[in-house]
Amino acid sequence: MRIDKLLANEGYGSRKEVKQLLKQGAVRQNDHVIKNGKTHVDPVNENITVFGEQVTYKPFVYFMLHKPAGVITATEDSRDETVLDLLDPLDQLREPFPVGRLDKDTEGLLLITNDGKLAHQLLSPKKNIGKTYYARIDGKVTKADVDAFQQGVQLDDGYVTKPAELEVINSDEESEIYVTITEGKYHQVKRMFAAVDKYVRYLKRVSMGDWHLDDQLEKGEYRELDEQEVYYLKHLEAKK
Image 1 (cartoon, helix red, strand yellow):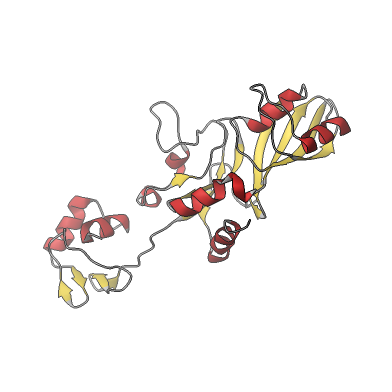
Image 2 (image 1 turned 30 degrees about the vertical axis):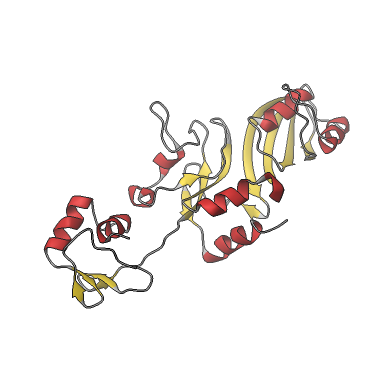
């Protein structure tokens, strides 16, 4: 990795500011001063310092975001605020991206990372990783709806979904439910309820597998995952 890219990614400044650090002789590769920004370094096996302070290199970042409604799940957009706009500029340096998507009006758990391998595995249909949502539904959700979801319902385009687990918390004129799906079709939860003549008024993703949204995070807030959570997600990706 080029030294100027490494230092910029680690938050030591813009490319222009990094160039100035190099020019000052502040950067060392082991015991040698580096002044050329194109110099390649190995941040894992070499000792890279700036003014004597060791540069800690983390190739991957993992963030849990409590996505609010009104923000789109994308890396950039010319009109709307994106989930990446909610990150501190320093946390955007490694070019993270959202894993999967939540609709603009859907809230809840979202993983943001630059670990492409992990993202691919988590999104693979073969893994059957359950994604659980809390929802408020117009109308009474019945035992017949639970049975229909368990069998799989036919969407408006003719696709029949995989079986889904529907749990009714409260069945009234506005029902409260949890639903767990293992797919990620476009607007899937909303379309599944539409297939049984119901309308989703509010939707929030609360978990992926046994990985749950941190209830200390307010809408729009995020935090870096701890080592145990990262380990769990990497273990989760290996499940058959």
